[in-house]
Image (cartoon, rainbow, N blue to C red):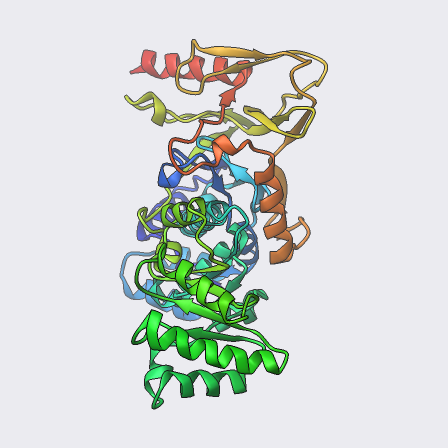
Length: 478
């Protein structure tokens, strides 16, 4: 069971208000974000499968009800309602792992107002964090240019037990190959890996003894940490000696560097290993790696085979959160959904009204050209031109001529109906593969670390006209 107490207190007080006033219309809420994290060009939408699983089991336990009763805030009838609560809404969303951009409705909740209000905190906590971490992992993976796998280490630095597991899951979707967290390996089926800590080496009389004992226990996974005392002295000398012993047994070793100059040391170590006849020995580096450091080392041709990344991956590094939000887009009146919008003095924060769909346009090679946010009843006919209006400057537009694109794909599909999953369950490997495939459709200019090209996300004419009409009505009423 997932405790429905995973919510902000004001969600419950509003929910009680709706209950007591018998104000519970059908509504539509959108989840979207306003800016790409890390000054990047995209995000990897992540967390959806866990959202679906947990919403199916979203409950208030008897202990939860007792706690709420103890606060003296909630009416008994309302608490009785919560005791038998089940989420009964519908969910539309992008597939997990799909490359996404600011302003796009990634998740659409169609439910009663009380349902929609209760799940807001849970939705944002799950999707914002996992999307952030998956995007960070994707950026780091892309920075390697295929030169070595990213290994996700250091989940001790993630926020709490659940944060660690979620970070491991999201990192894998973003492109990491293994996790250091054993429970995450069991829970999600992610391959697990690890080397050794400095304490292993320090517990023996010498590095040579420590390495030999480790290699005798783990002959097929002997990655030796060589920077405990003297990386280019006793560390690499002992590793080469044990490496030659292992080679005579038909085995190979790896070495790991966790400190020092990661541009200079791997070059010297590669040379020492090769001259000793250990050309197949691998080099792993760690030590507060960021995507910028990885990109620099790869660009400089530093001989590194794998990258162990902890803090800057599982905590989001320079950015603590994704700025995802949850906004009301429509509400039912007399059996018909009426579009709503939030108006702000900052036009970028004025929301897009109505029940929407997102279409992605592709060229003849499969390259993504642009995304168009439309109303859900619009059909993208591939035989006609389509007008793309700037989302924040309503006078700016361009026309996508029918010959300029080859195909169009809708991105939102229904995942839950009446509180139950209707989309097929996907393995984490399938989601990771899908994430890589989705990102492969985008030109490298959108994926570069510095000053990425801005991918076009526009509004259809019908949505743009609706938005302008509602803005004028609201201003006129005010």
